[in-house]
Length: 112
Length: 111
Image (cartoon, rainbow over all chains, first blue to last red):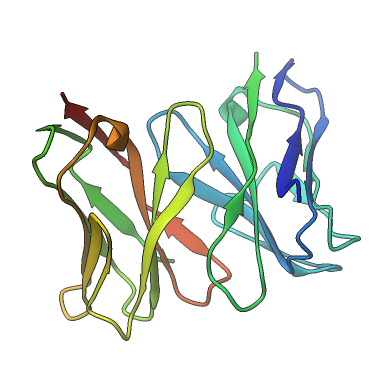
């Protein structure tokens, strides 16, 4: 199993541009999450999904959108990128009953 | 929502000494408390977790204690080694859907 994979690893965006961060897991996990981690800070939940077709907002959803059309994929969309969205983005997944989250390697995004 | 506070933000210990990191949470409904280790430039990895029906859990040199009345939980690392140097995060969850993280403790183990 590849586990949780994220693309791209790094990206530089100009203010106002849009992009999609990709997240895929091959463990057939129902639950998937998107977090952002600012320098020297903990992780903040952006959006999460409890299964295909179901998504919900976390702590910091403004400026982001998600979709979950399949169990495997959970892309995060940034519209009109702003410098405040400069961060490292982690995707995670977990099985339905167990609590442990498995994190992807992260995407480092810079908006200038 | 839940608010998790973590202290200290940095911690230096001599190799072989113990390290203790403390977290408090605000919502008494929180019932799951994981701890993650994150090495520089890497993803967070679960090292130990505890559920609210248990007061203490150990795994070799790592232990976690939970005080539900005071709403705090702690990570204890004994016989620290240089490879324990990393950033440690605590988290709390009520439903298992949303996880609230502390701001992290940067642990340095001095050889």
